[in-house]
Amino acid sequence: MKPRDNFDVLVIGGGPAGIMAAITSADFGLNVAILEKNKNLARKLLLTGGGRCNITNATFDSKKLAKEYGKEGFFLLPAFECLDIKKTIDFFEQNGLKTKTEGSKVYCQTDKAGDVVNVLEKILKDKKVSVFYNSNVSRIEKDGKEISKVVLSDGKEISAKSYILATGGKTYSATGSTGQGYGFAESLGHKMKTPKPGLVPIKIKEDWVKSLQGISINSAQFNLLCDNKKKLAINGEVIFTHFGLSGPAILNASSQIEDLSQKGKITIFMDLFPNKDIKELEGDIIELFSKNANKNIKNCLSELLPEKLISVILDLSKIDSSKKVNAITKAERKNIVEQFKKSKMNFDGTLGFENAMITSGGVLLKEIEAKTMQSKIIKNLFFAGEIINLHGPSGGYNLQMCWSTGCLAGQSAAKN
Image: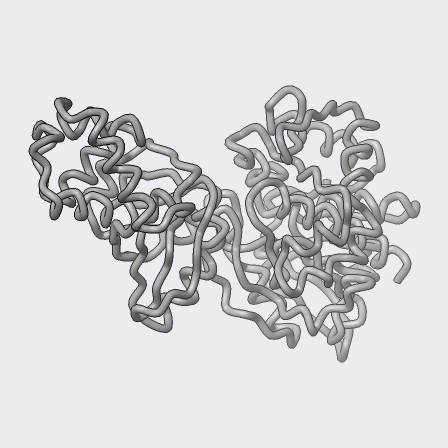
C-alpha cells in the first residue's frame, strides 16, 4: 500500500507511545497513519520485562505516580488524567489481554510480550490506522511555524494536518531506537538535554566484585562518594555481575551516578549492615565468635551472609578462611567489621546505550505544552514517549509514560 498524499494525523515511530497516539487519534474518526522504519511494530516492547512485558506499575494515585519521575514529574499529570493506570489496564483488558499484578508490577497474564504487540496491532487494524513499514524518515520540512511535509529516505513525501513525533530514545539501536528523533526535533527549532544512558548497569574496576557474579542482596546500602564527598546512598536490590553491579537499585540510580562521574572521581562503599553502626556490629561479631570459637572463620561468618560474599570479605581483610575463630586477633576482627561496613569499589563507567533500558535526556519540557503535548515552537507538532526529557525508575513507569503521553498527544493532535 502506498502512502496517500495527506493524512489528518501522521505518527512518526511505531513504538508504544506512537501506537497509543495513533489509536487515540483514530477514535476521532480521522485518517491516521504511522511511519515505522522497521518491518515490525514495537520491537523494543518485546524486550521489556525480560520478554514478559511489564505493562505498567500498580501505583493508582496519579500524584504519587508523578513523583516517581523526579522533580519534574508533575509535567505528566495532564497525561495521567488522559490515561491513568486504571484506564491503561482497562484498555488492555477490554481488548482481550488479561493482566496480573506481581508486587507493584503489572504484566500480561501470559507472560509473553508478543501478546501485547498482537493486541495493539489488532486495534490499529480495527480502527483502520494505516501502518507503513520500512518507512525511514529522512527529514521533516517546515513552512514558518508549521510542518509542511515528511520526506522518506526513498524520496516519497507525506503530509498531514498534525504530526506526532514518537521516535523513542537511543537504547537498543538494533530495534530502531537510534536517537534519530532528536535530530528531527532540533531541525525544527527544539533544544535537547544531551541524551545519556538511563536505567543502565555500571562497571566496577575491582575483580572481587565480578567474582560475586549472580549474587543478589537486598539489605545492603551502597554509599557513593564524588571526590571523597558523600553524594548518594543507594538502597534496594543490587545484583553482582561479571562487569560490576546491576539490579533495580543500581539501575534507578545510574543516571545520577553518570552525572556525578562528570564532576569527579566516583568511589562506592558497600555497607552490608546499614542498620548497625561499627560499635554495635562489632559487639554482634564478638558474641558470634564466642559461640563458635572452634569453627573455621568462614563457616562462622556464613551464618550472616552468602558463603561467596564471606570469602570475599575475608580476602579483603587478608584473613585465611580456614583459620579458627579462637585464633582471630582483635585487629583481624576489626578488619572484618571494617569490610562489612566499608568495602570499597571504584566506578568504571556504565555499559552504555546498548545495555540501557531507557534514555535520559531529550526534548526540553519547557518547550512542550504539558496539557496537550504540543510543541511551543511548531504549531502542528506533538511529542509522545521517550523522546521527551523525562523518565522514571524501572518497574513499568516508563511504559506508562509512553501510554499516557501517547494518548494525550493523539487526542490533542486530533483536536488540532
